[in-house]
Length: 224
Ligand SMILES: [Zn+2]
Image 1: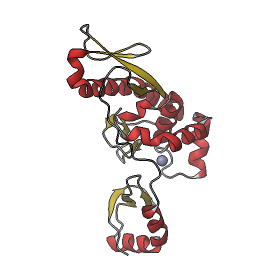
Image 2: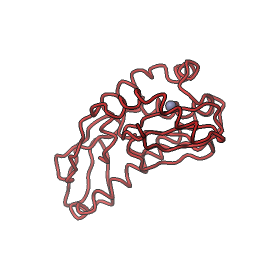
Image 3: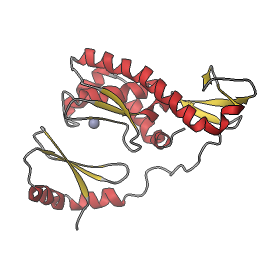
Image 4: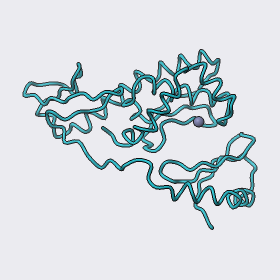
């Protein structure tokens, strides 16, 4: 069986194969690995890969889009907040226990909310990263937000940490877990017992966060 896959070379020592939530196969390999070697490993794991790829959809596909009308709710930090569309002039999005936008802004509400969520993501996630990096004694290069829908976070060989801005919809303890997770990867590349051990010290309730993601992860695949 032939697989389509993407190779990401890095300074790592071992070869690692993952199937992303969009069913894409990612091979993380040491820099000098030959394509032949990668093909061999893929073939040796073909049963496992086949099962992963053919696995029935983990989550229902949420095709519902927001209309940005009064009474709709939007998810933020794990809670649903109501939207109110008002006649008065409001610049952008106002948030205080509920969201408020001007009727005049309704046509571009999608862009305004995205801007608001992105801003909150930067404001709330970056301090978490600074804090966990300090606690762990690791240094990251750059903090970025991204559009990737099927990954919550990642770290690059250049020690950049990248987060899907939509994770701001998850509760704070989930954000803490996701941020700490990527930073622990700067110490330990793979999900070894050592990795989970270090992580559990930083985020003692990480299992609760993983559970939230398992049950609600699909909510982070749509914008609002
Ligand atoms: Zn990981």
